[in-house]
Length: 201
Image 1 (spheres, one colour):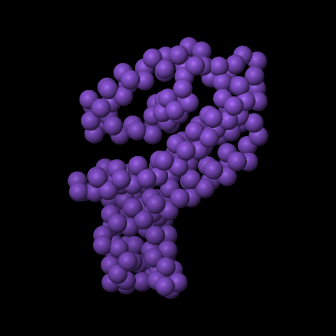
Image 2 (cartoon, one colour):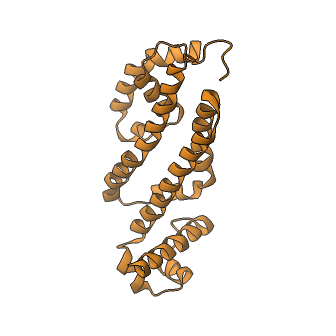
Image 3 (spheres, helix red, strand yellow):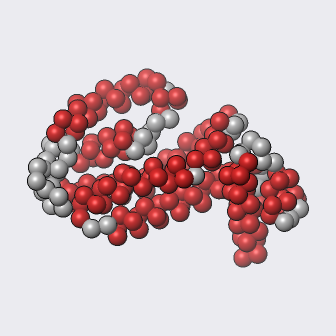
């Protein structure tokens, strides 16, 4: 079992290197097999296709990102530093590995639902962490807006972290409905901010 896992890890590492070096579209299964130092048959033993390998790479990054973000927020001191870390870090990590986003344009249509299921699974970790930080801000009486905590989390995740940005492509009506439902809270957030004046912790 350990040997099998080692082979799978080698394949994912090879694919990750090639996706960054040449892009997803220009990387073939033959290239991945050569980079990993194994036969193409071994690749097919672990993965059905290049798309499956891509999702394996993305899943590794998602798990790594969640850990980096969680550890960084836990290490931060005070509400402001924790909140700032949680807003800034996801964008930095995504930008650092932007070449992987190239693959999304080339995935077959039947993978779109799989991609959405994957997003839903892994975005929950960020939502939960954001909720913890926001709740702490309310408990410390640092947040001045009267937005309910769950609404504040939703607004920050959807419109600042762009956690559901794909909704504009998938379903414009759903995008409009969500915007209308949250625009009153969003306006309050823009006009009055989050922190009480003079509070820095």
